[in-house]
Length: 210
Ligand SMILES: [Zn+2]
Image 1 (cartoon, rainbow, N blue to C red):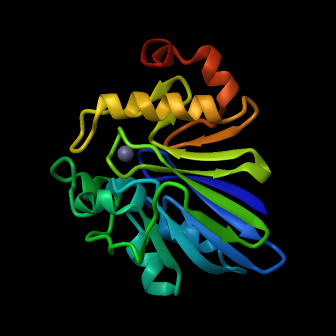
Image 2 (cartoon, rainbow, N blue to C red):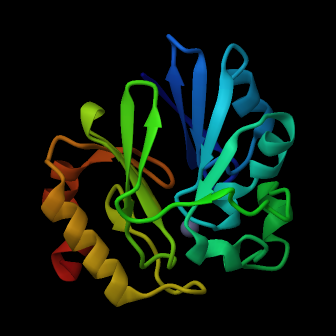
């Protein structure tokens, strides 16, 4: 499996593309913007699935375009359905280039689910707090966590947006830092990647929250 991370849109959302070079299949996680760049990366592959860590429009902004062009199945936790048409701020959808309304997921994912992709098993960790339905995608075979807006390099997801919950966020962070090894590579929701070990030592928020 090959991982490509594209930084898309004005908020530098990390859109992860998993490529199975043997089967020529692809999965896209958090296609927030820049549909044409994402489609360019997929040109020799069949897109079989679209995963969203959560329902904020900067993470699902071009699900609609990808769904229209492919037969890909869209996976998201149903507790974030209420966010799919929420622009969060007036004009935010135009600013980030989101195509609304985002289609509803074909499959609602939940804690403990696994999604098979070629020889890889993607484990769904339901980690609410930033939004009620936020799910991280953990691939133990590759020591990889796609964390969405749960965690950033040097930061954590905000909990003041609709459906945010600080107590839930603390619980989710505690759980991830208890369960995952230090060498786990973390693709965060925006900006730089990190590792569980790096954040355990250097993240100033975790000292207070955990
Ligand atoms: Zn978000």
